[in-house]
Length: 257
Image 1 (cartoon, rainbow, N blue to C red):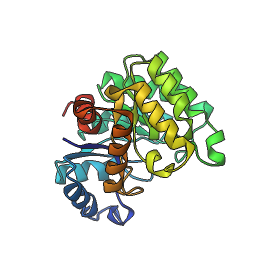
Image 2: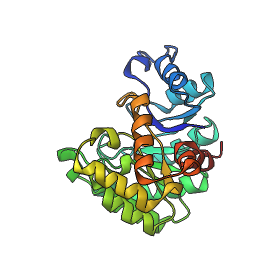
Image 3: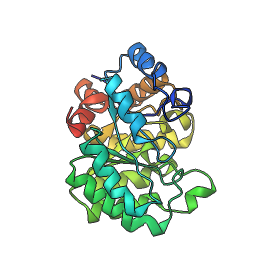
Image 4: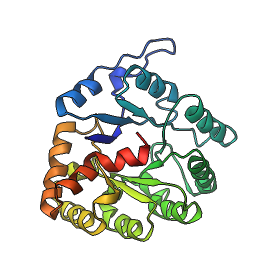
């Protein structure tokens, strides 16, 4: 079984107007071509509304939807998350500090959202790819470290392995068993660099049980992502059973599917 823990709606498949029907083509087609059994479809509020994710998943049972909330509407976002899960059937929370323009003032609210996610029995996936000047507005790994301590019952996914901060993310994950790392984007983005060596080192040190395959489709090619992660797993010596855990079994257990 292959489960891609990290995909997005292609821009061409988002609603052009509120009453437009949402018809997916390229993501299911890529999944079929790459023999991916399930894929987690991630929104980023307010850029992609939860309703689009809900409707896509209802039309395509092979998709698993996460919710996102507008962190700049603190009086509404907790209720919005609860509604998306309880009524919309969404199975996780996605936060993107850079694109959602978070800063240190949002930390307490993120703790509240993470605590609610734990109560709803859903994981939290947080983008942790340090990129550009916006990366200096919020230390995402420090925030994740706080979440792992303040809400130890939560299950938190560090997206993109923490980018070039993969070694910091790995040391934190080794200390906190409620942290997972997704393998999306970074292995291809840093291919041929010293960071690729760090990624392989991190995978070996953390071991297979809290690593999750992801592609970051459509930003990264799904087939190339699968091939790269398999190459890295061979390099670090994961056996067939360990590779199966990374490619899908860990995600299946985490999501309860």
